Length: 261
Image 1: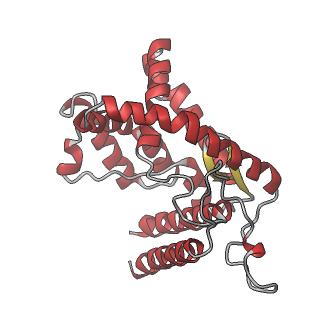
Image 2 (image 1 turned 45 degrees about the vertical axis):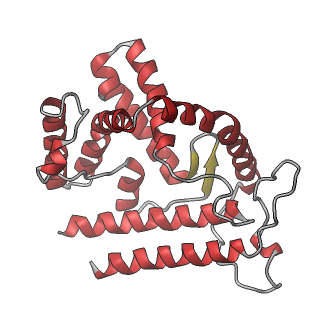
């Protein structure tokens, strides 16, 4: 437990330090179009200063292009759709949608807990799915958590990390956002499982598949508080790259500690 707390404090402290340093150097927005914060860290510090944002980034040119695409995609298409959803839907119904999607995604938690031989966590996940699918009315409500069955979140990227697979180069995926080689492979595996052995295969209805895909995309962005430029950092690309890498490493280590309990 001490290790977890220390790691969390390190991540939180570094985040605060970066944001504070960024706030002091971010150029003020003028009357013209706001430029994406893609400046390089080394351009803003004295030569020879250690780059605390340095992360393996073998395809940085592609990644920066994806970041730029995502910046405008989010600003002019994705967020406006999500804002429309948030205006139309009462908060109570938004929570029901989020619960239902979380319930369907328990298949990912179940398979990956089994892959890591975490049978207790897999049992809890199966119990959550059964309780929320029945008592919780198709997952619209989450009585399982109130009954002590906490969500045991896992994905195949964490499973690969659990068995020692390194994260590889950082990747910024168009639309999907921050990732790395290991997590991108994990995302593909989880998606294939969901489509061919999960709810998509169980229901086998094209209308359901289309509806789920659209609602899931909107709900996912609705629940992510991140907004471009709101970090206040002029080198936001590198800041996100570092924080994502640290967070995933923390998740992998936390998962290994939970496996020992």
